[in-house]
Length: 182
Image (tube, rainbow, N blue to C red; front, side, top):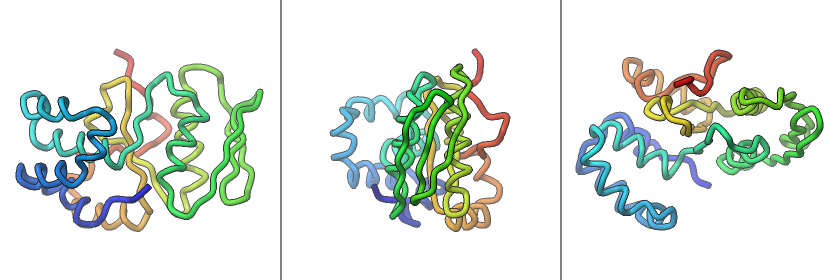
C-alpha cells in the first residue's frame, strides 16, 4: 500500500473544501470499493471541515482497529502499510509471535480487552527505528480507532511544520492510551 504524499499530508493540515473534493475525486475508487459513496454525502452535514478531511484521509491511508479486533489481524493490517518490510504473525498460548524483517519478537497478551492496545504498542515497539503509528484524534471517542503509520522522518517534518496543530489531529500512542470507557 502507498504512503501519503507530502502534498496529501499538507492537505490533512491545511485543506479546504475544494481540496477535499479533489482528494475524494482522486481516491473515488477507494471509497467505491468500501461502499462509502453515500457516506461521503452525509459527511458535509454531520462534520466540520477539519473532521471531514481527517475521515476521508483515514479511509485512504489509515488503519481502522475495532475494540474487538483480532490481534493477529491488527498486526497484519499495520504491516500492509509498511514499505519494503516483511512481517509474519502467529498466535500462541502466550500471545503473538511476530517476525519482523526475519527477527522473531513476542508480544505477551493478557487475553482481555486490553490486548488491542498491547498489540498496537508492541508492534510499534518493533518498528520504532523506522516508523511510528499515531491515532487520528477524531476517532478517539469511538469503538473503532483510526491510525496512521508513517516513517519517523515524516512525523518529525510534520511536527516541525505544524507544532500547534499536530496534537489536534493525532495522539501519540503511549502507555495510557486505550479505548475510552463510555
